[in-house]
Image (spheres, rainbow, N blue to C red):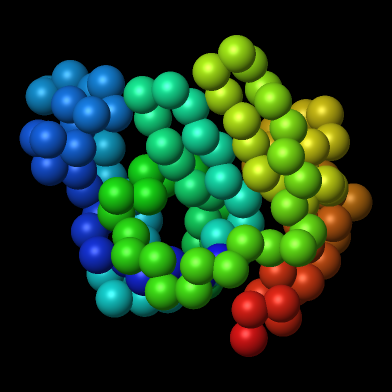
Length: 128
């Protein structure tokens, strides 16, 4: 799945639909017009987000899908579904379900960074 960035901040209606306060002003580090590979999806009642591959920084950034236009709607064959809570489901590559994966990636644990890079490469090749 690939998406094109159409905005880097939320308008009032989007904030309302996502359950944010009017004073909340999250900014997202994407470039309008750039196309991104979706690493996985997370859907939750009241909030619908995709986790996007951020290039060139090479890390995963969760962002609402309302900031993007879907340009390739094919889901990844590597995604596995998992119920997180009663109101939440994720579709991720299996490797990303590893306990503390995001924390270890953020901390730069070499083994996890290598796994992440392999997952990203596999997903990018899948949609090229």
